[in-house]
Length: 361
Ligand SMILES: Nc1nc2c(ncn2[C@@H]2O[C@H](COP(=O)(O)OP(=O)(O)OP(=O)(O)O)[C@@H](O)[C@H]2O)c(=O)[nH]1
Ligand SMILES: [Zn+2]
Image (cartoon, rainbow, N blue to C red; front, side, top):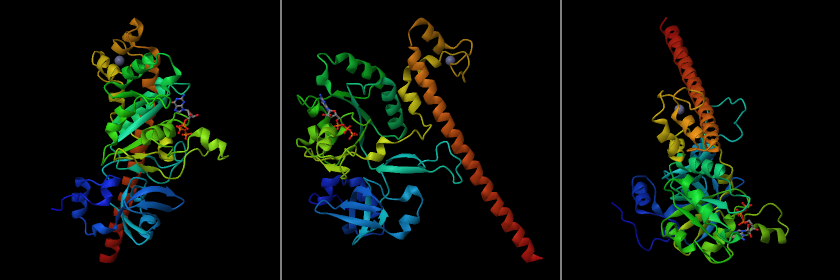
């Protein structure tokens, strides 16, 4: 089996042994592999570790289901300036088919990949008005659901004489997920975060606008690699505060991803993210009288009891219920569309049998 060549320029972009092995199983030449740095209006900016160039997708990919269309972070096969295929992804961040939420959809619900091949997600949260534990919970659930390990990054720590209470509050929610405080003023947190950016690693950032993602990228890179809100505004770029290169090569050896699509991800998975984010409620629920207790009105509910005694905050329970409902809704939509697909299939089988009978008559 092919071993990873140490002077392969692709290594600088996060190419690994695992990918090398995956590719040796495919009928393609390894010379035509590059990584997608950004996607814009049907064009891909790709890099092979030496140079960057623009490509367009092969017709086959355009017709393919959303799932197979290349996204930022993908490793792709290329012929000249045509992207011919996507190398199987290690993982991907996704959302349900865009715009279908709350509307009638004629096609079955599809997962739409937004970014691929990510080792860690930095959940970026500013220690200003942006700090919101409910939103942090949502982000944690979201990232857990996608099966990618998160790290919580609390930016703008310099805005407080003692930011420790925020750290403690975040840690209480994050249940074992690392929480790191940073500041562009004094550079704290940088060394701790660098560990996730080692050679071969790709980190994606998620967080609201103004949370400090671009500033964090600059802090970690050591130079102004990403335009921050303030800088963009001064050159009149207005609200478009993030530049087009979505995958940045970092001096630590890894790659950092700042992709606008990731910011818009909606919940799409029922998964077990709810369980990992609300481990405290899950633990209490084991003492509920009914195994399928919804913790809303049932007698003998240990969760409601914990709210009464003050052990659990009403806010946290509300947040849990809200998220559970959202996931239930998405799961039911998924089941419905699966039912529809199944019905279609049987209709076709029935037609086929009818035709066979006709022919044999
Ligand atoms: N005091 C302080 N301000 C910060 C820090 N990090 C970011 N900011 C400020 O917060 C604002 C938003 O930061 P950005 O890095 O542009 O935020 P962003 O998440 O990239 O925003 P979008 O590009 O809109 O998604 C800017 O005015 C920054 O100067 C920090 O560590 N300390
Ligand atoms: Zn209960």
